[in-house]
Image (cartoon, rainbow, N blue to C red; front, side, top):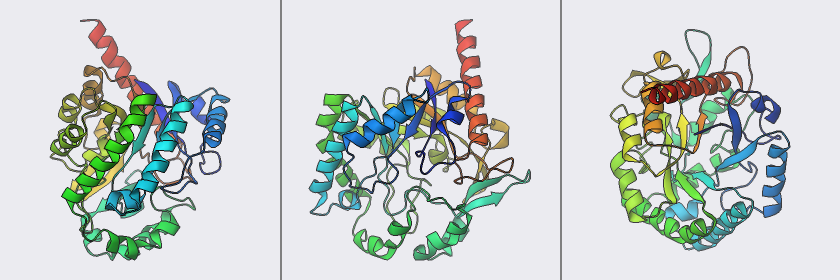
Length: 357
């Protein structure tokens, strides 16, 4: 595996490439053109400039997160083919720049959902958190307003103000989209892009829905192993794979995370390894990567990735805000650096214990 860190670009991220380079064992970044809108064509010149900037700091681009998908594709509107063509051309440009992994999602309206961006934990750190009780009492049109005050002035991915201004319109557009329709539209999209993925060896890694259940009545399909198996079977190509995000699948305690990893051998192209603490049904918060700080056995998750021979990029995810850092919630330097070191330590211990048998 390769340890990486997510980086939003020098104009949008409080963390610098030089700082990332100094985290022991981190050799690459997962990045994006953060100022592009879903459906936009990524010009090769901009991709090349981003690549040069990363490599000038002693790192390389391990993958892209994300090339976001236009709602017309998810909904199945007549104009979807135009946006799919842009997506194909973007993948082609990424392939020409020797970039071979793209993380994306197929979530309607909200890319991910949290009710708090700065819940205070007993140690004084602050974390992203979710309360189903709060969701049930909230008007979805007011969702952005309810959390934007804790964003520290950063634009949160999937929660761009211009997108949030269209919430009512988006809900109307999705009103006739159920899970079956969403699966059908995902199949249409994947069938269209697989030829360019095969041509340039681009591994598509779909990100799970977060949380792993319907929110505000919107359909969610990338939530559990049976749905993943359906997704892979309906477009049975090794380039059609998954991002195994422990925190997203782990929002549902019924998901067996190590078991899912072993069942997905050969189709996990990217891994987000983070910890959650379940307080009670429907209420969870992000935790430190250390197993004992949350509800997940991080050793068993890393052991499962090792056992299937996983060689792709891994990144720590959704760090706490600690030591007075002010950054995009979930994406500061300090706790993610601790997480990377901890996960690397687990991997080294697993590797050495296997070699001594």
